[in-house]
Image (tube, rainbow, N blue to C red; front, side):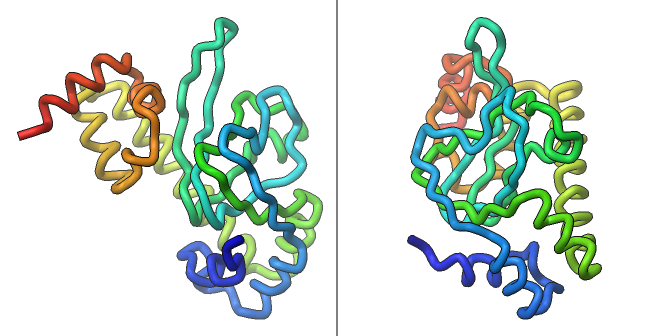
Length: 193
């Protein structure tokens, strides 16, 4: 198991949070191992916790009625994983969160998070940072799908997730880009000198 305290302290998200507050956070969390292929959250489930990835890799995915998967985003170490709107609204999540590697996540219940958030302003500041980044990424993804071709989206993927492609199956990258795996193979061949 990794050292979750070090992972939290090293994370950009917790800059500006005092050591005392970090320890309060850690006292309310539980380190959970999520095996490769397992779901942290299953679509249709109402989430009651969210997590901070200390080790491993996840993807958020939608699955249609025919079983076809659509990858929304990849979340490596130092990312928060949650179906946050479903948790806030106490509703079923529309997407699943799947571990792509054996992973470790510090989980906190939503009720403990609310208590923590109300106890010190640093937690609201952290939440704002996380939500702003998520909103910026969502807006960028929408713009990319509306205005850019697959080759441009692939280049942006490589820039946005450096050193991640080798950790992913090709069909997942293709799903993220909104193209068939064969099209991704052609793009990759085109990239090679």
